Length: 336
Image 1 (tube, rainbow, N blue to C red):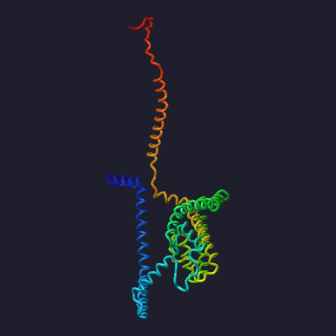
Image 2 (image 1 turned 90 degrees about the vertical axis):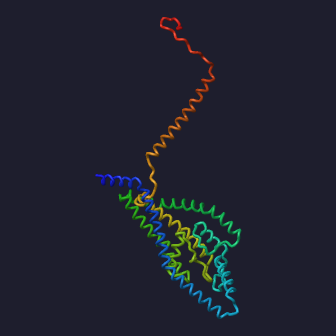
Image 3 (image 1 turned 180 degrees about the horizontal axis):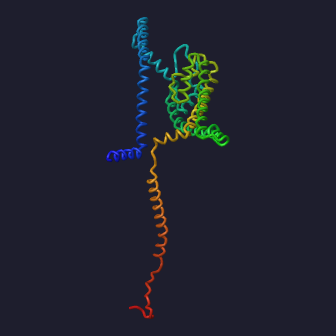
């Protein structure tokens, strides 16, 4: 008997705080996912980093042995300056791109990566004025971009998602949930094909040093706004039609970002995902809301009553004093 009562009380306690338990498991799962990613990246990339370090040490030692007139300190100063310039997008290699990093098309590409928060990092402002303007430009431009993308995605979603689902639901009588799921899957497949696989094939042809995997990696890193900057198109040696190429990449990134947001919005509108998301949200207590509404109404009513009673009291105070009338007896004589 006691065990059944304790079990039922535990069940009621869990059901009462179900949202909090789900949120705790969500936080725990996210932390575990972070640790899992760190373990995998470290185990996969650390051996390659170690091999690269050993190779660089051998090259440096061999170079110093072949050029005894050059000290190690002078070589490190030169390499440090070269690496610093490389971080700003300037290279001293003879086979590097001879184009400027801040011509109009390159600046347009840079502005698009800043406003979309992609930020490859291959080109950065060099001057203090450029850094200050980048801050001001981003503070205004990023919310402006969010507003622009929200408006565009809302309009596109109506024509691409809601109307087709409603048409098949009303015209053919299919279940709205089933139609929404099938439509979301098809839309995701079309988006991945048009903005990932096909552009990856194009980039693998236009970029000499990129294979299909590297091109697909660039498309995903760019359209997900991660923007690591290890692969940037249009920076090769003697790139043909570089200005037109940069403008095309800018348009591709903008359209691809809109397409990604439309797909995400389509999946977020699925009934199953809405139900799943609500598991982690704070549920409003209807009784508390009702109490707050009643208290607010009572407060408003009392304030209105006070305001209405105020002029009446003022009128009474302004009226001349009138003494109480003496009450008469039934026989007509005044009371003593």
